[in-house]
Each structure stands twice: as structure tokens, then as C-alpha cells.
Amino acid sequence: MVSELIRVEVVYALPLKQIRLMVNVPHSSTVRDVLLESGLLRRVPELSLDSIKVGIYSRVVALDFPVKGGARLEVYRPLTADPRAMRKQRADKAKDDARA
Image 1 (cartoon, rainbow, N blue to C red):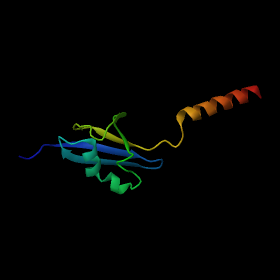
Image 2 (cartoon, rainbow, N blue to C red):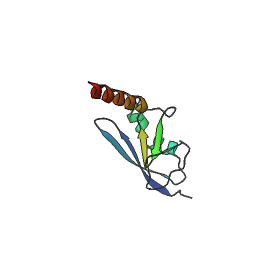
Image 3 (cartoon, rainbow, N blue to C red):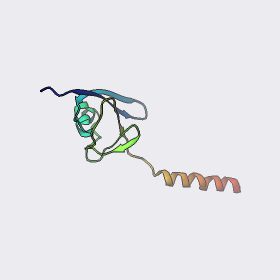
Image 4 (cartoon, helix red, strand yellow):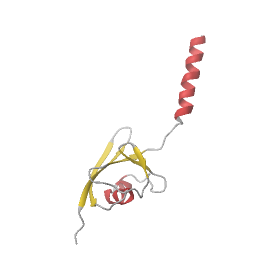
């Protein structure tokens, strides 16, 4: 019996370029299966299944999450700064500027 294939898009955005890959996988595939099949981990060696964060349409999912046909699998880059700390810095600077 031949397994039905589904088509899934894998995207990874860098500051200056975006990688978009279309992958055909069996309908019972998980996020991990799609990532391995896409070849993205070979193309971007700094990515690791041990620490990677992924989502489907902006919703973070686990690597064992089942993927449906037509899904857009997004691979997220690690944050370089804590958003809360950056927001506090901007607020403090705005207060200091207002006092001057």
C-alpha cells in the first residue's frame, strides 16, 4: 500500500534572506519528519533538533506534532535580547529624555 503524500512548506527567515522549501511527506508525518525530509538542517548547520523552536502558522508546536497537508512550518531563530528588558530600557530612556 502506497502512503498518500501531503505537501508542507518549511520556512526559515534570516535577517537578509529567507529559505522556503516545499516538501512532500507521508500524511502521518510529524514536524520532526518534515524538518529532516526538507534538508533544512543540512543547509543551516547552526540549527539543531535539540534546541530548535518551530511553529505552524505562528503557533509553537512540539517536534512530535502531526502535520497536515498545506501547513506552513516556521522555524524560529533564537532571541538575541530579552524583549521585556529591551522594553524597560526604552521606557527608562524615554523617562530620562523627558526629564532633560
